[in-house]
Length: 239
Ligand code: PRP
Image (cartoon, rainbow, N blue to C red; front, side, top):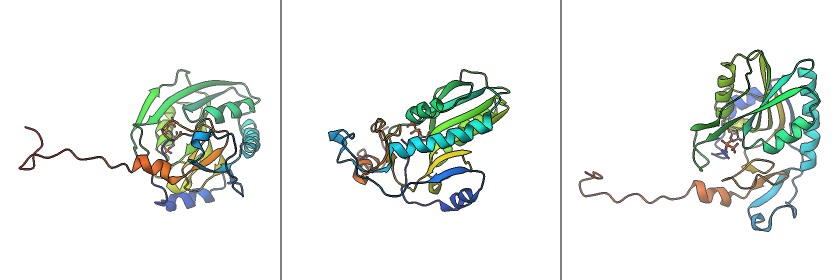
């Protein structure tokens, strides 16, 4: 869910990263559509528009799969996917990979229900032994980079033969950690995106496209005013 701090602009690293020739990416498609009737009625006032259609996603995944097959040909790979946001992307990606592979998951999440927390909690550890193996690490969105940076460190410590990273979405303007993905589906602007596995407060993951939320939806939660506890005379609380 984490996609905080819209438009704070950490553009320095982003610019350098975007210019790097090794990253395979496609720009976000032109022309945004209005959400269709696949958006549940209850969410229609919350999902502002479609940013990337399911057809555009499917086409891009076929392209990414070709790149991955070319790079991983000849050896059995281990695909490591990060829970929970990769659910749709992973399913579509691996069915396009005509390669021998084994699949495992790491459960990692930002702590709590807010959009701003940087604390990561591991909810599931890797079970396969990746030592000496070719690993493809899959995530739905590369945002600040904190998740990928941390998980990469964890997997590298297990001494794989090599590790490559694959994300559907890259929001380069928000990068905090110096980390980039080897395969990128779409570069996206600093919009709060949901759908196709991405959530806000665990909702919207089932939308078949990547969409943009109306700001009132996430601001309502992330900028909630929490009443302070009354203080006793003298300024000390308790005791
Ligand atoms: C989201 C997303 C990425 C991560 C990216 O996960 O799925 O894993 O944030 O953010 P970062 O680059 O700023 O670290 P989240 O922790 O919200 O859990 P989820 O996959 O269950 O939605």
